[in-house]
Structure formats: structure tokens, C-alpha cells
Amino acid sequence: MYNIVLFGPPGAGKGTQSEKLIQQYGLTHLSTGDLFRKHLGEGTELGLLAKKYMNEGHLVPDEVVIKMVEEKISETKDSKGFIFDGFPRTTAQAEALDEMLSHHDLEISGMIALDVPQDILRERIKERGKTSQRADDQDDEKISTRIQVYLNETLPVASYYEKQGKFQNINGVGEINEIFNQITSVIDSY
Image 1 (cartoon, rainbow, N blue to C red):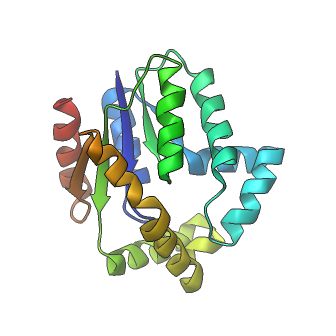
Image 2: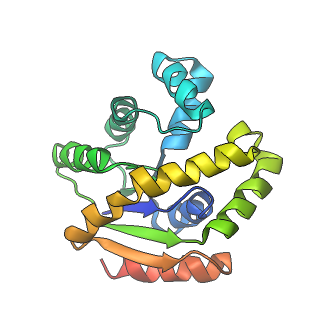
């Protein structure tokens, strides 16, 4: 069983690569973005709370995200593994994820980080904004806020997994299939 944290800033290509990894390995996709959209679409209390933070370009509080993730893990216990896309975003979330997985006799196999320069991130997010209909993909100030939040609050998660010997950095610039092949070679080494 593989439990992979696919990591990187907004616009790094996590969603694109997650889709390919799900097909390759039969993993359950656990995207906080998808969970947020589900909860927003259903108008749940957690969804409404998440929306407030997302619209401001800030991270959703840990307790809200963790409740959504735990619910998804509990619903899919017979999975071949999980690909965590956009989670954990803080060291506290990483610690909570490890604890949560241990209750199910699971652990993170590894974190694979997609490394992409900021100027390319901005271009990708703006391009995605043309079709995503997400307000935070179309506003330069919100894009800057999201990248800065990633650098200040999320990037330290890499150190958390590096200390466990579970971190691998991948160049996230290039052809989608080239990046995918780099990722699969890391996964196949687990």
C-alpha cells in the first residue's frame, strides 16, 4: 500500500500528476480542494467555514481540514492507498495525519515535492483561472497571498517528512509525462 503526500505550491501541478498516479497505482485521491468543494456544494457547516477562509486567500484552519480528511479516510478503508493532494499544509496537520493514519495501522510512504519557480507558478495559476472559475485563480493579489502563505506556513512540512527520511524533491517544470516518470520512479523505490 502506498500513501503518498504530493506536495508543492499552488500551480505546481499536483492535481495533474495526482490524476495520473491514481490511474497508475489505483490510489484513492484525497484532495482537500475536492473535499472543500464537496462540503461547499452540500452547504455543510464545515464547507461554509472553509469558504470564508478560501475567499480571503488564507489556509482553512487545521481542525476543519482534519475533520474532512478523517471522514474521507474512514469511508475508504479498503483502498490500495491514498494520494494526499494539498494536505497536509502545516506541520500540525502532518502530525495529525500521522496520528490519524496510525489509528488505521497506516503510515505515509513518502512525500514527493514538485519544485516550480514562482514566475511559472503565477503563469500557471492565471492560465488555470481562465477555466477554473475560481476567484483566487484570477486575482494577482490573491495569487501572491497564496504563494506567500505556502512559503511561510506550508513549506516547513517538507522538513517534517525530511526528518523522517520520507522526502523527495522533483523538478516540476517540463513535460507532464517526464515529471510523471520521475514521480513513479520514486514511488516504485518504496
